Length: 319
Image 1 (tube, rainbow, N blue to C red):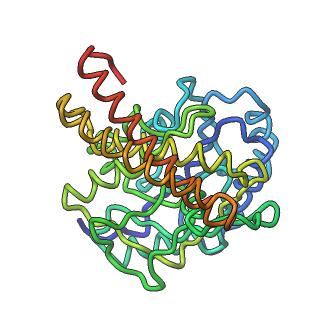
Image 2 (cartoon, rainbow, N blue to C red):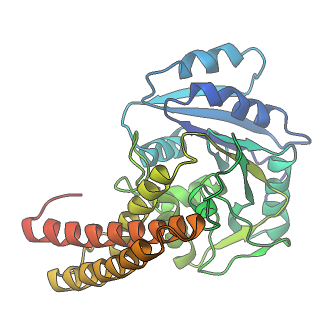
């Protein structure tokens, strides 16, 4: 595919559900972009019941490029797919509602698409912005569950096992549509922490032989609220990550009953082993305790996911 021309338009898509208190800062970080290419800002309101619509309306005079679209079907994948239908841009740049784009974010994405020529997707760094000081027990692995990502200090083509994250990722709209968009059985829906819709999409993008690039200058910050800075939230997040991984790996084919049973048993054994280690170490080191707890929760979630896949296959239940 040829490089982007100067006439290419971008749609910055902010999918949101009941985050009106955070939404204005996100929108204004996009409105404050420097030397930005032609773009619009599309707030995809995913069945919000708070003041989301009012916040967008109040910013209308200050941000003339701003649009609001309401999607009644709850679920981040439904919201992302609605963006692909509604966007006026040739490229859609997804930004989480609790993220803040650096001033040169959109310009840097545009430059990478232009310089790379054949890039179908471009992602960039995500650094964490803590609402309060991280707790003393917080383990390094915990940052991954909050979306932190820095794959390289240099721009480069990403390998198949390397993927950006949905909080900071841009893709050509026509390409995303040709791949069928995002799987509706993955991704957040309300308070559910099921995830993986971006991993699954990027996996399909790369399996199709299409190029995904890394652009270190296209950076955003991602807010870690006080509510999420808790071990309880991290364990829930890890549990749902395990379940999400099973759905991604199984895809449309949930696997045979034997495959699901063997995988569930393996993950259950791993979870039990680390749970025993966790019990022994429980009073020795808070950070290690949290690290082991997250591992146990994720493997237990995988075991549950495999068992659920076996149940669905046995009784022909849709996910």
